[in-house]
Image (cartoon, rainbow, N blue to C red; front, side):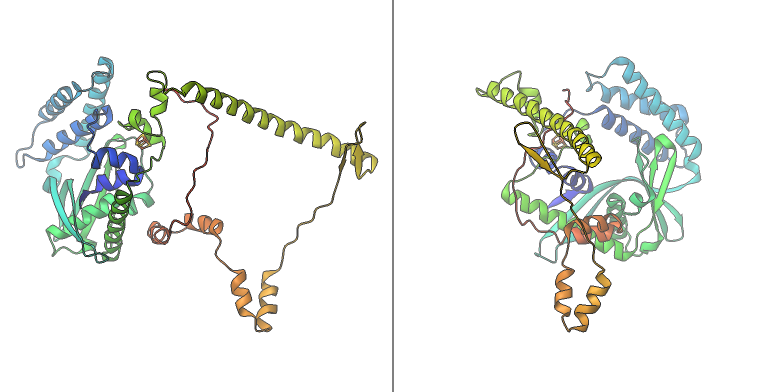
Length: 393
Ligand code: SF4
């Protein structure tokens, strides 16, 4: 399979989006954010690409404006004022970046650097190709290099996220493939967050890179497995807001289609949904009222020392004492082991999925991935989950 970091990221975010975008190649409207990001990337590439005579700030800014203006023609829904706001914000980012990072201060060896890494899978003998483009590579010392990827998004991730970032690990693999004499420890990996003028850096060991290969190969095998079953589930998340396939996605298309071309039994469904929500709301009200009534009844029973109270028809409510105990497991272990019953103690320690989930959150990302790889599907069924918040188109 030929793939890329961005395809793998798309698959991990939502398999259904991966199917629309990568497998079915359904053309999508460009988003303002992506168009803006591409124009800024193009300007930064231009900024570093004319060594030894670097372009002036005016030249860089007009390069950006030209790129943005020609690309934003394909955004007819974006108001003129917003287009101007994007342009101004891009110019501001570029000026700040240039002030902090004048290109003559760096020894840039490549920009928009295309790569291909061959990834043989020892599990099934298949060969895969991982391709991509690195924004910039600088030489930062004898035999040492820095990989820099520009980010135009608003979010500044934690250092932990940078340390386990798959994109940087993939780029590291690509650099070592291009220059095999370079040591893994001599490669600095950086993401530059333009909106914050902040660069976050990290490094990887050879062992980390072996883990990266395993993670990528495992994802490729997952994709192939899903392809064989034609099963690419939609995973709704806040990122759906930016997904160009929202109107055809099984998780959202009903929101857009139900008024236009309704199915013959659409009205039956609408009635069922409204009744469902009405009953659910009554259920919640009833639960709240039941708890208030329990309070009144308990207070009465306690005030008059009663174990039971009766209504006028003879229906009654009893108060029963419930007790919960906890065991001293150290003592139990000692008792069982001293009786030669160690196997009974092991049965007691049987794996507990809830506890595993709690422990997982505290583990480093690589261990989380390795543990999650041990997961196999044991049962599958669908449940209805109602949302209490209405959404708008
Ligand atoms: S709208 Fe959301 S759930 Fe649907 S394909 Fe896009 S990302 Fe996936």
